[in-house]
Amino acid sequence: MKQDTPPLALEVTHLTKSFNGVTAVNDISFTVSEGEIVGLLGPNGAGKTTLIQLLLGLITETSGTIHILGMDLKKDRSKILSQVNFSSSYVSMPTSLTLWENLNVFAKLYGIRDYKDQINRLLTLLEIHSLKDSLTRHLSSGQLTRLSLAKALLNTPRLLFLDEPTASLDPDMADKTRTLLKAIRDQYKITLLYTSHNMKEMQEISDRIIFLYQGKILVSGTPAAVLDHFKENSLESVFLKVARGGNAE
Image (cartoon, rainbow, N blue to C red; front, top):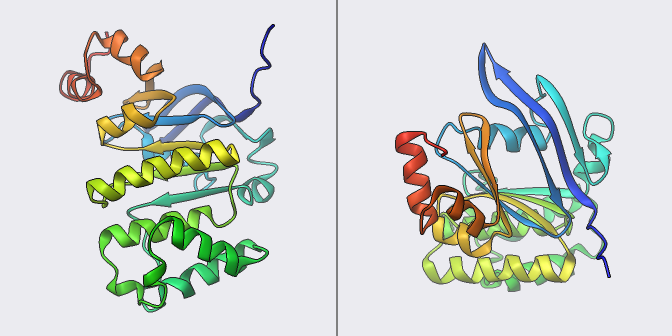
């Protein structure tokens, strides 16, 4: 019996973004199904950050369309953004507030019901509940990463964008975070689109990888399919081949 195709969480069609004559994202098209974990891979300057900014509506495309959760980002931006979120190791929060105060502010901005219970659940999940009264300026880089992830999960998003989600974590907490992300995906059917320079992590967690180079998609497929395309045994070897030689064949 034929299985139903999962609905699309994200549909990008002929998306292009140019800055002063430089094309950062060059006519790319792809889809992401609901519940997928898709890794966005590519060397610096490949267009990953620009693409994430486009998908969050932070910058406007030169041409092309973006549909998120079946809605047009241009027409339904507010409705879409209430159902998505973003976490990055490189985005800071007010350092004069405690960890709890920061999450409290965002929970109220997001209109979260029973926000105290939700904050407590996330603090426990991410193993930072004991730090809830600590000033954010006193947190380590790994603790700040977990705080950012807690903020991003407050509204139980249907689509979550992650930029280097485990970059500042030690190996133990990074492994726990990957396990947690997969568990959250399985339980709540959240779709994840994320970037990482941790090739082992990318290979382990991704259902599919989109490999960008100079604003274009070189290849898209399962980690195994990407390795087969490049005739390599590891994503690290693939990355180095592309970054150093720019050869997709």
